[in-house]
Length: 149
Length: 131
Image: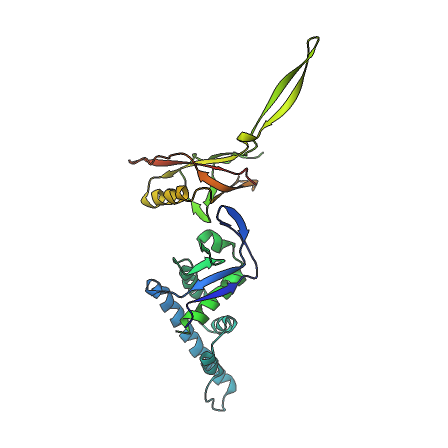
């Protein structure tokens, strides 16, 4: 199992490193530890709820024909992408606000996210990220470490 | 009419820092200049303008409350030598703003930590001229 993934930024931002200003290209995301159990719990529960409601709605749409196994299940075995995570969450009744909040808290935890693999993520740097990048980064975290575990 | 700026954001190494009110000051790192006289005879003088490049460094000064995290924070800045970056940004009530970025900033003084009810740490960075 992987212990870190690299998330490429669509909108690079400036940050400080070794006494100079430089432009960030990617965020290195590391596997959460037991210190992050509460955030991991919220994200896992949100995803399970979202996947269940996703399946339920899929069955309703295709009713009355019986559905054997859903696509989400087979995709999960093959690995689910960040985009799929976001799609499933967005289409479910799960509140995205709580997912983003737990995701942000996780990203700001010590050792989880490093800008260009060298500078710890801080509130200042997080605020510079585009909303789209933040969503995709949280989706990547969920797909890589929450669902994969 | 613009208002006095009495509050500014201080960011050191990607972290926002809470400072003691009214403690922030900085210079533009433009250095000192001198006008030197040249005697031309007959009571006439002209001038030679001179830049003192030795003084063309930036400076940022502020105070922090002597909390344990701040004591540790300043120690890290000092230990980092000139690998710090300090950014200050201010805005008045009408939206007029300024921002200065000081690279290769170092705490060169042997700073003191004041312990007491109102104890502070007076921090002074010397750095490249701001951009």
